[in-house]
Image (tube, rainbow over all chains, first blue to last red):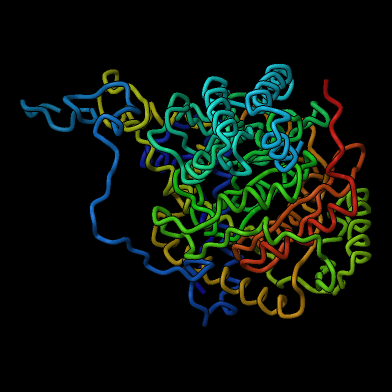
Length: 107
Length: 488
């Protein structure tokens, strides 16, 4: 059986938070360590049930809906103005985003 | 008053929609400082709509049962031109560009939207205390919570600040607050009501539904809400829109499953007594009680944790600060923008997101989501055996009465031994059937320590009519839904 129990320390949490760009305080880090460890316990209980579900297919929709596609016909959608109405700043009718590459090549 | 009663007053010319709307707005004005059921109130739009319906009535036009009747909508449903905040700083000033299908359908039938109701931030929670707009109070005792996450919707109906309301749930967020506030809450079969335009959390579990004062009203609203919607890929291709027409107070010869697991020591004694009394009433109404055992699986919270976490993480990843609010001019880089945006998530959500995201990444977790879906099938298979012998199953909707406020404080839940003991019962009451997408109702069935208790009736997929009829029979035989909280 695959062993899933994993221990987490402060370094792990800081790393995860950095990867996902979510700011966390020291207090939150402590809480997260215990939360993540708890979650790996959940996964242990999955292992216990492995035998029972070996032959079952995963269910993707309780009502049996599969790969629903709509007709490939263009439909009326939001106007450019409407789509942009949720933001404070726009640029020539586009969403504004932080600079990714500068003309002068500087970071 | 109920939708049915008000509709007859309107068409008989005894009361105008404008009068009704003004009365509701006045009540909101009077009670909001105590109840805080609403995040946004929309008096101008409501009055304009009410006048419009009155003109239709004067012209002798046929109007829908919901026409001119005030409704409050959970603030997780998009409303064109009206703020949708999901009770979070992240979307604090977000104004929807379109209506959710549910809202569109209500508008089409001339419903009068009086406002958007409070909820737990991004619907994550069960006491409506994690809202950044402050907690909602339970109208029966304002020192207590209304339940959640659709707590504002339930409190608005119970306090008379709205005639009915719209909520949404993953497993009990409509029905648990309905139970704690002494009103009717209905969760339809998954896919029967479109999710289009709801701020997404756990997509494979989300079910919008009505909160009303009576079973009749629930049937009326469900008729309007249900139906296939091409814009929701998980919407079911069924169009059943005659729940109200076919509503009969009929509990006779219905085989009702009684599972001993629901009547365990994890349920408060007084609540248990009230629910057992309700079951006796169902028997008197001609239902046949059949003892059953629930699916053997007790790891529902495990399955839930995995499905919920994975889906929430993927849904919340969209908040990057580009399309919803945020100030690009003040940030130097993408990194900055993400941090600026995501620092606005409440502490519980931040924790949830980080653990969620961790769950989704890394080789060791790769098959977890699939395993959870297999376990979900296992539960469904076991339930289908149970439903060969019974038509419906009843249980208490909640193992306890409304919690005192302060259960959530400063980013943390303060549980104790007793509240912890409720958890496994909630899992089997709500999560187990929710994994299967089953419909269910909570109806008022009595009081414990002067606070409302709800009776849950649930059944297999598409058993809405049977549930409604049985609940209707119970409601007619009792008078719990006529009880009102002691408010000014």
